[in-house]
Length: 436
Image (cartoon, rainbow, N blue to C red):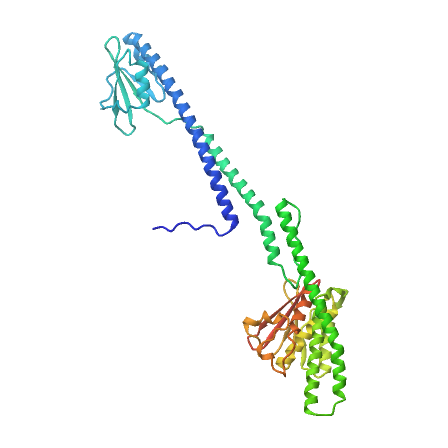
């Protein structure tokens, strides 16, 4: 048993199938009715001509002298029927309860004056003959080879052209109906809390324009909400710095003890968390920094030298030979966070710079640490998310370093990705366009 055809999964295919099926059925019914009416008209005209022609021809042959009749037969023959001055071919008597329509017309034309006997003649080309006797007693046979109703040669061409027009109109209608939905779906799909999405065109049909305005307004409300949330985070983090500073001053006045050291360590962690919170909130508005052109190789060399001067195991390989139009403070913060993570978990960091075939600059920060589980490579970009290995006191951070780096990389027009190295450790890659 053959399986039933599956219903299309896309809305465009479903609409196209429904429209095309309806149009083809409607057109088929219209064409069939017109063709049937044409067939009926053509048949009636042909049978009417047959009656007149046979009646005239038989009357003429009957009045001609017997020796002149043979010379007139070629003039009286037609495409589908001809006349013979003999008894014809042997055949099978025609069932007059269900006679051929041409036989009925011949009977109607000459049957009152010349009784006609019809026989079906078997053979490669089925036909029938009507046998009658003229007034002088001589036989006459009307040999009829029925043919189909003639159809104009241009009719199939017109049919194909009309079907092509139906297909084109269906495709155009489906495209006009689906295109706004596709743009709407793409806009919703690209709706990212960390980046501004594309603004939809608010022109077109009323329903499409209304949906576009609704999506644009939604994006605006989400952006305003995130900005308000970041401002709240920044305000809380900023206000916490003052009481933390007062608490540290009071702890400094305490006598040296284990509890004092623990309290001092906790206050340092709180202060670091507050500063990271302020930094993350400010990273949401990284576009406030002016763009300027910097020598990327010199910029990276200066950054690495700062770490080396402080005794950190940081090295630089490769060069780009490129001047970038970027925001240097944001770029330094991104790379510093990546290098700090590499030093924290791997003990060393190696920067590698290269350009791909498309002209983009790839800055990779490599470490020899334990890496990150594959299912967490995207989760670590979320604010305050920390992998299990970073939850202890010695290596644990705030969970904002990579979130800040990710946010600022989007401000720079770049793309930050993480991947585990085959040899062990983590590779943090910052991809920057040539015009970043």
